[in-house]
Length: 167
Image (cartoon, rainbow, N blue to C red; front, side, top):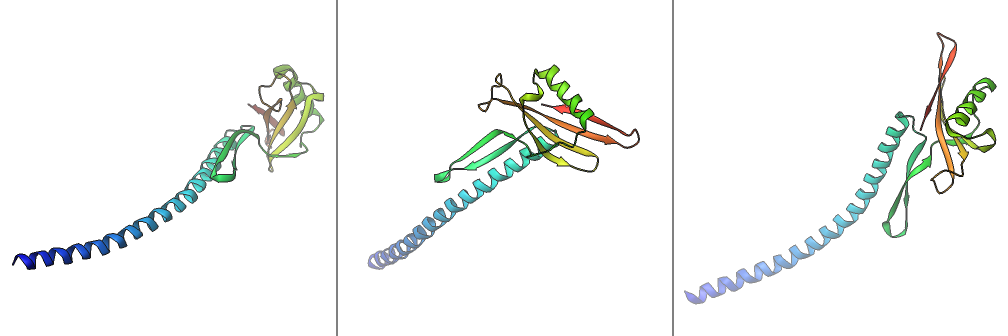
């Protein structure tokens, strides 16, 4: 009886050794798969965070956006001060341009000659969303620029345009 128990134990040990080796290989493959998947998931989740934040910033009319730059080695960099929109030409006529420049001069001390660019976020039928960027030596930004969103909403019932400035 004792011999049979030893041989059952030996057979049992061989069975578990083979399965342990097989299980170890499966575990290693699973961990490799998981690490690859994690990298993809992390990148996709970071892209999702950036998209969500930028949608929130746009809804609030903010002049900046978040940018995610992928670096070598899987490292990324978030930049929270990217000016929104693309360089373009304002839709404001002379009367509204003068009004906008007057705002920047009285509220910010910035002159027409300081204007670096107008960036177009969106030009819709009744809402024009622009970012006006000025060269500003007093700015705390590394590029020494300051800007505000200029949101112009046409009100057809009044035949007028409401202008809002957002920091």
